[in-house]
Length: 343
Ligand code: ADP
Ligand code: MG
Image (cartoon, rainbow, N blue to C red):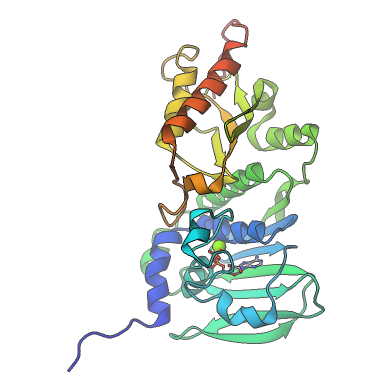
């Protein structure tokens, strides 16, 4: 009698979900990334009970044609890459074709979509162990809505790790903050239990950018920030860094984007720390919102399922570019009496 058998699609997806769907905010991250990849100009996020009861993301992006809907919720199904070459130069936030399959294996998920040039909207849900797609007609403006209800209802081990509604919503707010900083030109609305928490207009001009950064990072930060705008040998760095007089006791106002993706990276952290070394008191942390743009083929984003880590092909060059750009900008600031922000 054979002992080896294939896992059911639902169980296989639940196992994969363990890696990417840690808590409600992970769902929000994946769904907003999908909306951004679909070219959305406007994204609305509705949350109930910290996301455990409901996460609803509505976008005005490209939408999904009816014939693609059966695959949208399947694992290893993506419209974003096809070949290894595509993977190596991937410019979209997603590419693993796993998020929707993972999320819908641990929640009750419905996706409704209408492509931009079509008159009809359709809704897809999946059923049972086989996760069989069920498609029905629906009403929707062009774009997509994904509704995730009762997250972890069928995975009690994960559900046990949920914190209070307030804590879970705090994580969601942080995710939206990063994404709204990452895509200044996209309008975002975040509601919790029907109350508007953030309403961010699309930012086009420099003035708009500054307003949005102020809304998300505080007026104190942006008022004391030095604008950065440097390009050299295929690398471009823009954004804002706080003057040394605005330092923090924690590393909680540090946002670094690589080609629009927020990342945490040792090499980047080191370059920034070095640039601030002589101007910051020991134990204080700099604050910054920085955007690095470079050829996607020179950065590997397929390092971890959550894609928070990257690997630069030319690490040394990136490090030196960051260090020099920031060091020069900071050196131009006149030393001032220490008015240390003590938050
Ligand atoms: P990935 O983002 O890695 O491709 P997902 O499981 O997140 O994988 O999504 C699967 C596919 O469903 C995407 O490749 C995309 O074609 C489609 N999709 C998902 N969300 C949206 C959306 N909001 N708008 C348009 N298409 C979407
Ligand atoms: Mg995705």
